[in-house]
Image 1 (cartoon, rainbow, N blue to C red):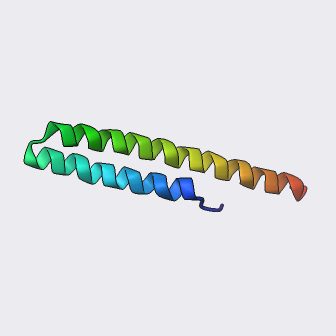
Image 2: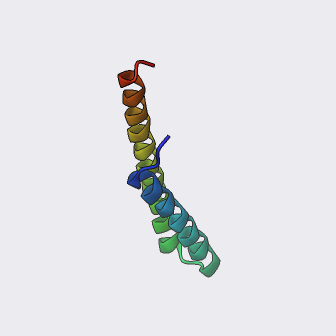
Length: 67
């Protein structure tokens, strides 16, 4: 299984969003908490998109090799 840019970027956004959410909670800033949660969701979606792209690419390679 290969790793693509969407998978990496998505997981980075998820991590940044989690840090942002926790920081917002720590300082009592609900706006930062919400932004962090949104960034996590966006990152998760992008990572999932990257996973699907990778699965399709791997699947097409297997098909072309007669597996």
